[in-house]
Structures are given as structure tokens and as C-alpha cells.
Length: 446
Image (cartoon, rainbow, N blue to C red; front, side):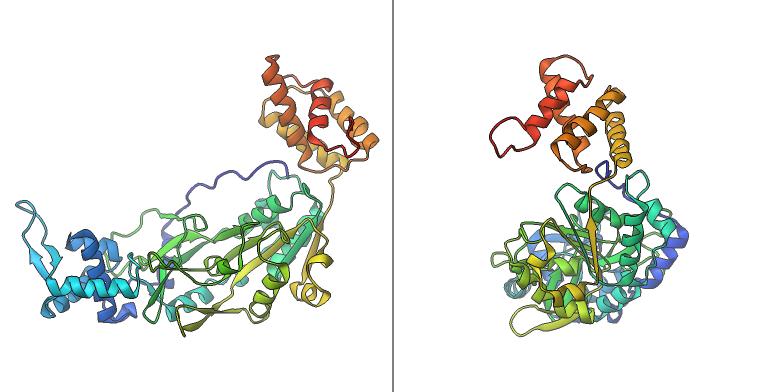
């Protein structure tokens, strides 16, 4: 619990991994293999052309994430229907360009009024459900060695690690609680390191004629295929309507509302967006600071009580369009409030794992202190740490929390920088940091 997570570099995959991914979702080479109708895809082509004016054949391939033969078949159908026309080539060796006819512009406007989605061709709902099950997070087995590798360099007790590991394997929700500053949020996010594996996330899914945007760069970290096949090699590689990503990690805190748990339609753009739990499928969903959201805890619990039991969620996309998707994720609740103030015993029983986060030991505190000093190139004598532990923490009855070394040393450094006296921490600077860090209810010096 001694440092923030370092940014994860965009991972690359080799030939073996590329082969595994390709088997999950092979590239469609015919219109029938997309699972979408000709009229649906023609409307999407029309919207792209209406938005851009004129597009070349290769630009349409890129924007719709469909193979050339599929685009060729769509354009042929649209030309027969009088919706598309061929425009003059650009340059002596330029590609054919395509634009909408008057009828095509009218049809594109009608399609845009019915749904504002403008992006790659979506994945049919049934295909999405199938691929979620193929790469289920609950099929991933975490071992003790895997947990220690994931938390390498982090000060955490073996006892706590051996609680979190089985909880990840259980397939049940995890409830972590304890005082503020005990490292709950940091360690909950770090759990994603134990789940690191590449999965396919659709950029959008189609529920009948309604398209729901799924891919979110804030939740989905894309990977790169090293030595991947050429886009022209249609028999190789995975369906480009999917993004190859690390397992999703979705975090929500005090900003969470009930609306964020349902499919949302933007009234201005007429675009549908996936709820948090759908974006987190095949990954981890952390509800942080539980009890401080804009949604009441009992409303949140009641919303998810069935999905947690049945491992499937029930959603609505537009009037009368009800559909079911897998609820395939590791759900983590984190709070510094008393769990019994947030949920009754019946719901707590359904969660399964309740893990208490406590203050750290003296040895752990010292390790975190040393790590922070090394990270910030601070000069700090051993006697100063004894002063903090025995004179400040012990005498004043303040428990040793993993957040304290970073916060106190950071504030002491702020004062030294302001005073222009170097970076050697002194008892005076630490006492000054302590007095400014803790609130004294009596109004005097702590």
C-alpha cells in the first residue's frame, strides 16, 4: 500500500496469443457472417456518407470495420436501390469514390433520426453473449503465486493477500471495509493486475435495430498485436468490430447515479451508451466510497441483487426492447462506513466475502516510509521514523495507516521547498506536517 499504480503500458501480443484471439471471433468475410441485415448495414453506410460527403472504398472498409467483399456487396445493393452513386476519382491513380444520391440522403436522414450511432458496424447481441461466456472472468483461476506477482513491490500482509485471492476465485461479490486511509481503493484497483489477460470488447452491440456503444477508452485499455496479420488477409486475425483489450477495470465513486446502471440514450445525439456493469463485463467493477453516492445503497443493492444471484442482467434499450446479458464480472464494494449501516444481513450474506482492512504493523509502516523516501529522494534519519511512530502516533493515539508516510512526508517536503532549505526532513518539519494534517477538535495543537 505504499505507492500509486504505475501506468500500464499498452501490451503487445505474439503469434500464439493472436491465434487464440482469432479463434474467439474470426473475421467475417460475407454479409451473412456479420449477423446483421443488408438494410441495417446500408443505413450505417449511408450515415457515414452523409456525415463525410464522399468516401473511398478503403475509407468505408476502415470506418465500418468490415471486409472489402462485404462493403462491395453493400455498395452494389445500394446502387441498385438508387441510394449511392460513383463519383470521379481523385488523382490519376485514385480510388473510386462514393456519395449519396438524393434518395440516399433522404434515407440517411431517416436512419439518423431513428438512431444517431456513427461508427464501426456493431456486433449482434447473441454474438456478444457468446464471446462473454467464452472469456468469462470466472474461468480465470488465481493462485497464491499469481497474487504475489500482482502485488510485488506493494506492502501488504500475506494474510490479507490470502483473503483476496480466494475471493477473486469465488465468483461472488467482495465487500472491503475499514477506516479511511487503510488502502482499500488502492488494493482493490490493484486486483486487476492479478486478472491481466487479453479479451475482446465490442465497439458496439446491436439489440435488434438499436446500437449501444460499448467501448470506453477510460475503462478499456487496447492491446497491440505484434506480427499480426495484414488487414487484407481476411482468413486471419480477429473480427475488427472488436477491440483487443486488457480485462476491463471500471471504477465509480461518489458520482454514481441510478441512471448510470441502465442503458442511456442521449436526447441530443440519439446515441445509446452502455451502463457501467456492461462495460465491466469480463473484468472488474469497483464501487468506491459506498454510502457516499448520489444513489442510496439500498437502491443499488436492490438493482443488483438478481444479477449477483443469477449471473445475468436485465436491461432495456428504447421503448419495449428488453434484453438479457451476462453479469460476468468481479464486483467489489469499498467503504469506510459500518457495513451494517449500508445493508441488512440478508444482502451481506449474498455478497459472500467481507474483508476488513486494518492499520498496518510497525514493520509495514517502516517499509512504506522507506519506499516513499527512496521514491522522492528524501534524506531522512532512522531516528526520525522512531520519533513519528513513538512520539506522534503512539503518544497521540493515532493508528498506523498506510497513507500516513506519503502524506506526512509530502507535506514536510512542501514546507522545506517553501523555505528553500533542501530536502532533509527534520523533526520540526514533521511536527509541522502533523499539525497541519490532523484535525484537532479541541481547537488547539494536537
